[in-house]
Amino acid sequence: MQWLSVADFLNMGGYALYVWGSFGITALVAVFEIWQVRAKRRDVLQSFSQTSEFEDQSSTKLPLPLP
Image (cartoon, rainbow, N blue to C red):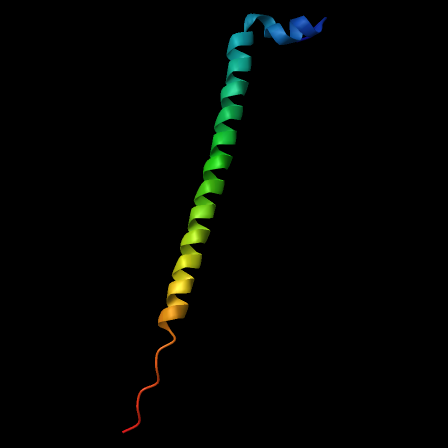
């Protein structure tokens, strides 16, 4: 397909709404996915750091008394 102008390119042979809508929705889904992965990663790292701090505190037990 050859376009004679930018308007012809943007019109996409009469399928502009479908083509550009598809690109737009795909871009939105990709951005949402990246945002969700970053949020989940942050939550997991916070959970690990809290678990690590708890384990560090519980591992400092008093020595057993000698008989």
